Length: 463
Image (cartoon, rainbow, N blue to C red):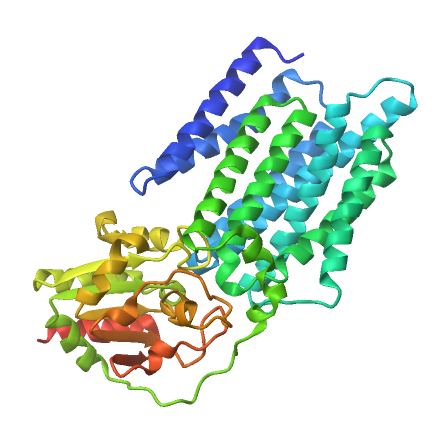
């Protein structure tokens, strides 16, 4: 029985988690929201030590210490460009930990059952759910990490017999879950976990690079739901509330992002099985393009009336956000109207570009979402694309065989002039060529984005 004081502290922690979510919804309150959420997490870890009769306390403390040191060390070393990888790993660790805890609880439930005690069926259902979905989240997150870290191809991977393997594995796990609820055994739990790992791997393999941000959100929702079910198994109210919040918010975010992409979640996950998503090339094109120097680009920007900036992952890689903000400030001081156009999946995780630009103190009012700015591209004198490719690729609109076909894009091709800052002619994360690069109105400035922007900035200052 949890004492009243502990329940009140759990309630306080739950309120903190809700306030943290509220804080994270805006750039000005995000830092405080993050701190409030961290405080609630620490509170949740500390409370059980003061009321529960815990076994193996030194091992628990050692595990918390190892996790804390590893988390702090990793978070301090990770670069902005590697944030999606870190989020993917944290998703996986959360799901995997919940699955392991559920297996330990199942061990105790099996012992009670073998000793002749009744075991609550709903607890067994929650345990089986936690083992299965937690394993799926862990394995799927590891594959997502490998794709983001480029340890494997970011293109869709289809293996022979995929429908049989995926469908058979998932159905077998469900059948075993039903058997486990009727007659709890450890072997059933372990096999469910192994099948969950198989399903998790197969779930993410067919997903192409442009869809990875949505999969990160989906796996985050899986982990939240797993933790919520684990909270029910452990009779931990705060764990239940925190997991529910993460699961619900992750589910809504996934659906909203899929809706913004004009596709269903199932199409994003399994669309590659139709064959189209495996098309494309990862090779650099040798077709002729029009290129220019930084002085030419500086003149185009300085004497424009309307400029729209399209930031992408390459901006983060080059850590060029501060130089870009300085250039935009200079253009605005010269009377140029400038906005940043933000695509829902720009970067490699939800909100990646917003966080990157907030780090450079870019006023949030200058960030304009895709639906709000797409009608303004036709009035723009220059669109400056910095390290983005797939989100302005007309193939999403015009080429049914393209992996990103159907994905809404920023209508950069409607502007009077388009300037691409690129390192090379290699295609973007989706692995397909961008026809916009070869348009007569498009100019390319090759080089590292930070170096190129610094030269363009100097050129504008010299005018």
